[in-house]
Image (cartoon, rainbow, N blue to C red; front, side):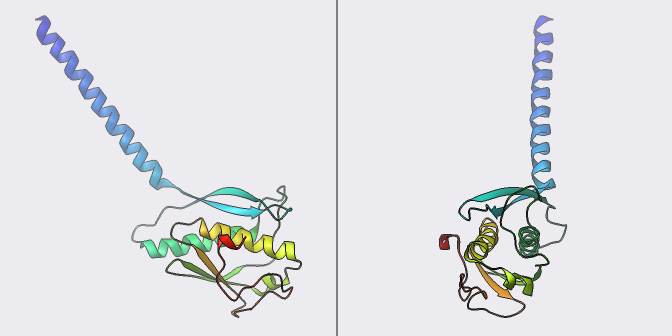
Length: 175
């Protein structure tokens, strides 16, 4: 009698352990696909260091290809950089009204076409800081290592201030 009872208790404990492991696995899979997080970088006013800001992004939509999701992630991340950090954060910002006209991913390079307001960035520190934020954010995305920038549909050699060369894709190592 004692042996049958011990076997039942052992079986019940084993079932509970297996059920717990299944519940843990299901919850971990569910939570990892419920939200994506990306890091947006903002350059501090000293122009040298970055402020990482984690933002949530929706997971891939049903039927959305990985290429479409990457495009949407790039567009969202670039928009976050251009919008700037919260007002209470001391950081270099793009000129007001700057927005993304288009975003394309070819291989490991993102090409962003920014509105004309981006060309109003003045001064070495402001130009470098704003574009450093953009490049650091884009290259934090999986598979991206360079950012080509166009302004109002035009390939510029430099911004009007002449402090930042835009004729070649930008990389983190440029800073």
